[in-house]
Length: 337
Image 1 (cartoon, one colour):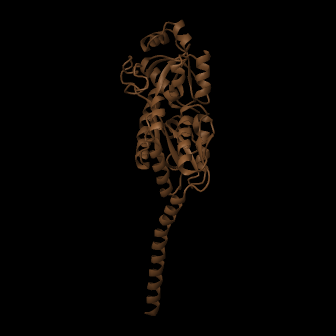
Image 2 (cartoon, one colour; image 1 turned 90 degrees about the vertical axis):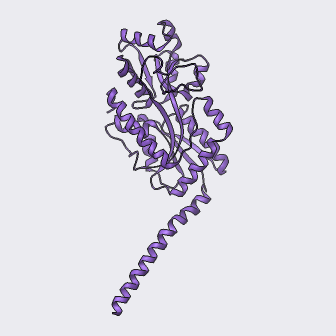
Image 3 (cartoon, rainbow, N blue to C red; image 1 turned 135 degrees about the horizontal axis):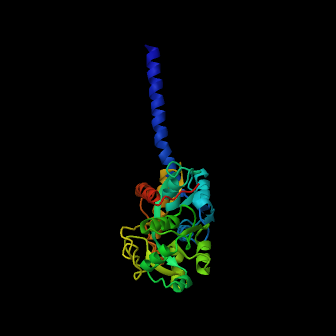
């Protein structure tokens, strides 16, 4: 009987210790979140400087730095359609001091177009918040457009059908939304172009403006300044509705490709295992930063719409995007070895 009682007491003590431990863990994480960050924070951007992922990261980093009183450093790690930098973020410690500016490519498209990925877009990350969704814009080298008398999408389609594979379509990399937007366009219009992938937006835009490539379906924020400066000729945006930043530019659906819709987005993620309290702290501060009037005005002028949704909402959004882009990949037949 005494042995039975001792065993019962031991089991009760073990159970109490387990409960206390379970309660202590979130309390400890709450304390960490209250004092977070205690050192500098790094945001990995898996694309080169100058592109929309970089713009989004630097906008967020500047605001968080002011709020936290710590340096928030943007670290560009480009390569393989965003896979290089994303894999590095996946390997980082889940403590809130390394974050990733994930994209529609890294967390919705790449798993459908690449045979293998060096990371798991779901298991290796904790969603923090969607930062900005943006349209892509079909834009041409102005000299190319003038030379071939292309002033709208219908005229571009006519020219492409008469000149299969002769037009160079730049993209920001294999498997990116700028690549898939072009592939979807070709599939829906029965046209063929020669795809020329670049390592990010800046080198791709440089070549389109120089005439080495003829057109691109680029993210609007990274192209806006060049469009306003007359260095790129916009024909249409890829979203279902027109962009307030380019109200006179039609959608592709309006311009003669009914049913066409595609867009890009950029959001913060943390490595798997990052405590929920720290994730919540980062999400709250980013959401508040995106509501800053100066930040909102700056982003809207570039064609980006500030978001700042919850981790759960961002997770659900990425799941929906993954399904949608899998369908686009299947329709276009795009694959990357």
